[in-house]
Length: 277
Image (cartoon, rainbow, N blue to C red; front, side, top):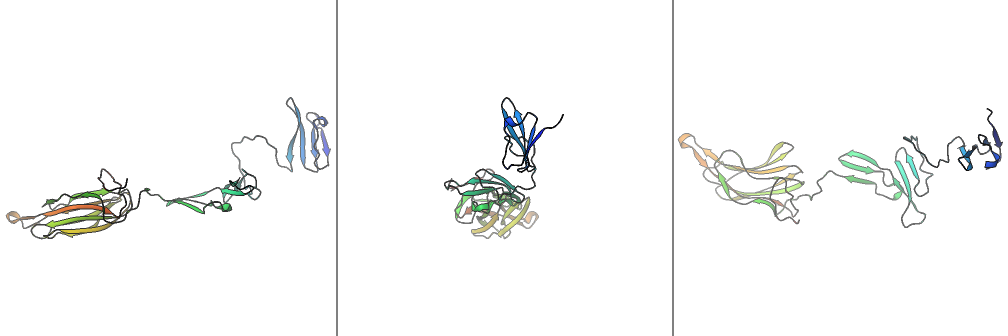
C-alpha cells in the first residue's frame, strides 16, 4: 500500500476535507505542520504536529507528566500554570478588583524543624516573605505576679523527716509562675520546705527554705514550659535518739501559684480560680 501525501510551501495553508482522501496526508513544509483527514460521521482536518511538537490536544489523560522546566516568563493569562525548578508550581491570576493586573501565587517551600516555615510566597509582591508556625499550646504565656490562680490555703504540720507534697501543678503553658507559701517551725532548727520542678523526667530543686519559730512568707519565680510540674513540699526534723529523741514540727500554709494577670489553665484535675474564661 502506497502512502499518499500532498505538499504545500505556502505559509498558513491548511487543506480542506475535500482536498484529502481518507488515509492521505498533507504536509506544509513552510509551517512544519502535518495534516490528515478524519471521518467520525463528520469529516474534518486534524493537525498532527508543529515543529516536531505535539499540540492541539482537546483532552489529555496521563498517569505521570515529567518536565525538566516550564518557564514562568511566558505566563500572562488568568489561570496559566507554570513550573520552576527552584520555586515549584506558579499560578497566575488576575488581582481582584484591578482590571488587567496580574499577580503570582507561588508554590511554597516547606521546611521542617522548630515548627514549620513556608517561604517563597512573595513572588510578584503579593504575599509575605515568610510564614512561621511554632509548636506551642496556643495558650497565653505566663508571667509572675500577684494574681492568685491556684491555692491550698489551709495550715498543716508534720514531724515526718520525709518530704511531703502540699501542692503541685502540671503546666499546659510556658513562661514564669510565682510560687508563694508561709512556713514556721516548732522546737529546734531543721524543719524545711522546698520547691521542685519536674521536666522531661528529671527533678530540679528550685529553692529550699529552713523554717524559723515565726511565720515567714517565701516567694520564688519559677520558669516553666508546657509539660512541667512544680511541687511545694515540707518535712519536719528530729534531734536526739532513743528515749531522748525530740520531734520538731514544720508548719506550712497559703501555698499559691500566681501570675501577672494571665489565665492559668489546669493540668490534671487541678483547681484554678480567677481566670477570665
